[in-house]
Image 1 (cartoon, helix red, strand yellow):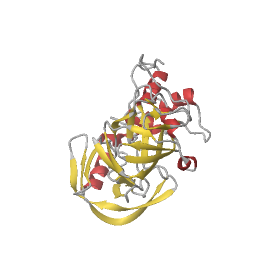
Image 2 (cartoon, helix red, strand yellow):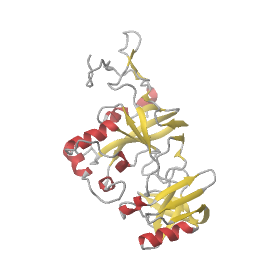
Image 3 (tube, one colour):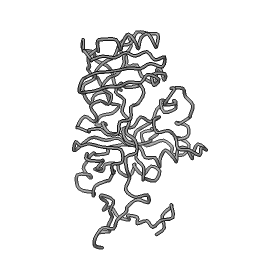
Image 4 (cartoon, rainbow, N blue to C red):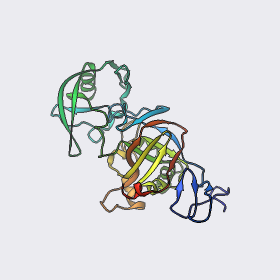
Length: 302
């Protein structure tokens, strides 16, 4: 049948779906092309070596059970030990981080060109509240805390987190948003262009899905490049998404638009995008396919 882009499209009408194929039980071999735009692919990878600072967009990452090692490797606390992030100061995104996990060399570049860099050395342990969950890390010694304090005008400290601990939700080391959803959000807001996906700070941005098509993958095993993940839930959104990803200044009422056209979820969240955990480690590159596996008892009990 003709697809929405005017080309022939085969649609899956059953629950048997895997690797871009579909079949109705008892009707023989699977037919190709389960999506109107072909097999979905990764179009952007985003990591935050320092939680709250500017995103970095590598061409490829290695996923292990804790996610991407360099993602959210560090976070910032204030003089009282409270986490200091974008909700408290959107201008954090103007500071650009660069981190090499092999050499443990960290660089922070500030808007005026000031650079704080060097090999990471660790000091005392500190425990920080992450959405009601305690995370124990270690204060990072060196120039970064002083540089952050000077720029933002208050005492701040950089903390190194254990791998995979500085995440927003339990078993949430992977996150994904489709460009179809970003286009729809823009359309609902009366824009000609999709909303910038960087507002949502998701690990993977994917094209080749209809709007919110990623929601259909919940409780499913999905192959992303060489890795296998289990998508566990939708991501409830907060006011950070209203901030411009370059300047940190609120300039788009994401929450109002989401509420107007999607409404509140059963747990009264404004859902946009999905998250999950890594089942099988592997490398993921920009351009890699993103394909759900055939439904199984593993998915039913996930």
